[in-house]
Image (cartoon, rainbow, N blue to C red; front, side, top):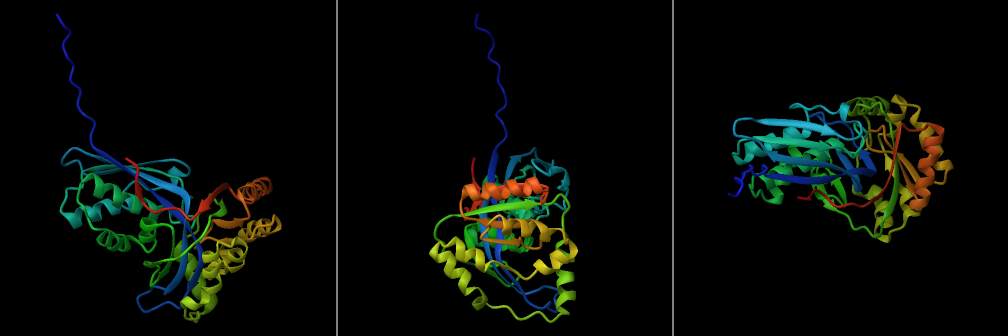
Length: 314
């Protein structure tokens, strides 16, 4: 007699998506408006440090759950304040689907480091849940939903290099040639974005200059030419002075990068991560080693840009 056949339940459907972090090649900030927002002109570049979100179908009525692993995972909330959670909930409301899903985030971008790690989580969660639920939301609508979650989320969906205006969420792709080598020095202690903007307003006494696209002509030319030396010279961040006033030790990290021959060094976004542009992969490793030896950063990454946007892996 043949042994009985044991039937096992099929695993629940899943969708796995990764989305990139970013560096602000230029960030220009205008005076605060009546709605409390600052008009921005920013040139974003996606880099090959990724957040990965796996969405797994949960049993009906079980609702949303979220787990996190990877570097600095203990710093990431696992409740409704998490951007990935909010993204799944927003997509469910938009499409009329029950949000019965288990999300798992694998960290690869510094937490609270001005590199859009949380925004990448939201972008990946939107794409993953759309695939899992087979809701077929058009990309234009997905980008509208992304903008409702945060100014950086649409860029994490699109990736590559782009100019952002408005609050940074209105995107125009930028022509870029070649590959750029980056080093990122992260701090275990985050830096509050609202606090940096508040200090910016104090330093400018509310009189920041209006921002426009013409301010970054040299930077855009460097990108089109694939010229890392010219790009390093054109890096710019209006929030850097404010970030340094709150975290003066970041100045040493910048100085060490320049002394090690970085083509340019800048606080990324609102900080506290410092970005250094290197001549090559070997040069990037040398800058990273110097930061580590000098204790100028709590964690160091080397990578390249531009990188693609949110992409389904499985």
